[in-house]
Image (tube, rainbow, N blue to C red; front, side, top):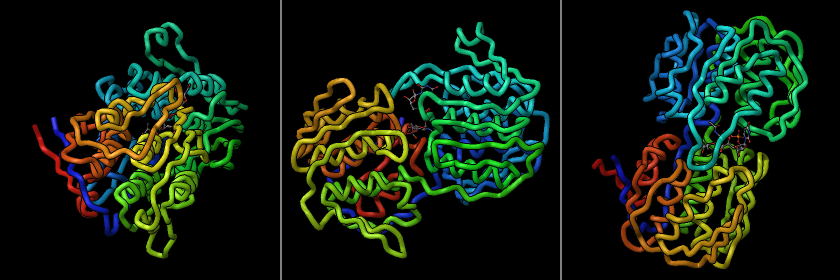
Length: 423
Ligand code: EPZ
């Protein structure tokens, strides 16, 4: 098992280029099943999850050519497509559920064995299924009680659907299913994340007629057929936010290239509240953690455009060392404080009470042996290790490899003292 060894590092300086978005490329790869023509996906990040999604598409019968050195994936799903997603791949990545709508269209059936809960929560999919039922799919209840989604649909028909919670995955599955259904679908209380917009742009290029992506109401007029397209994936806003925090926590000065500031308004606002100077330049976003003392602020995670849950643990790393107490409230996932125990092993002295974490702040962290409890938490303990006295040893870093391309190389190029050791 690989580990990261992180030593206290001076202020980070230099520039970093952000990779393509994991959470945009995964639904877009699933959507390539909706056409029999070639699709070329560019700026696809070289991540474990992208590799798993490509293997899933291949196992379903698509031909997939990956050239992740050049961040390109080519898919042709003109062959016979299977209905069942293999469990050994689904259990590696819950985002496998994103093929649900596409499989229904291609084969009239979709069988996906659900993985259990994960570190951050139970991850139900009742909203995905509510949407598919509304479009005319039949879901076998007996199979579902055994954790198997077995959906059938000879013909999908547009409908009005309300999401009780603006679920990202449910919005993506419903958009894909509705885009080739007969008639019009109106999706209310839809998720508004930039990754939804990127998926809608990809589908519209294929011939879909989707309006309102990025707002809470999305109108999808079903069409007959999709053509193949090529598409550049948007930059990963969570990777960008992670490197912004890396510059802030080390009191450094880093230019972040290839990020979309508009996708991170809440994070930028909160970093500014902490005293971090953030300057938009033609080259990218300059993050200056060396201008002012870093003071604390309170965070509450919300669906987009609120503060993103995926930035909760990286930002908490900053709050453990910033001056003054702070409160972090996690409203999106029911169990996304697993990293608190790891920060406390480093001396952060954080208390949690239900959805709230109380961070005293102003700590001089000590290096320790810690674990990556999910992919964002793994990145956050690395950030904490950059300012902790001594060595921080991070294990289970396969989580980090799921969501951050060349993470330690990018950090080392900025002056971070981090290395990967294989055990
Ligand atoms: C996506 O997960 C992202 N993953 C997550 O990123 C991200 O944290 C999350 O959206 C929220 O922004 C991908 O895009 C591949 P949800 P998803 O459905 O779609 C509850 C990362 O670090 N819910 O919006 O699974 C659910 O339990 C990952 O890159 C229901 O209750 O998120 C959760 O508490 C982690 N019923 C909340 O909604 C449902 O039917 C948000 O889930 C569906 C969801």
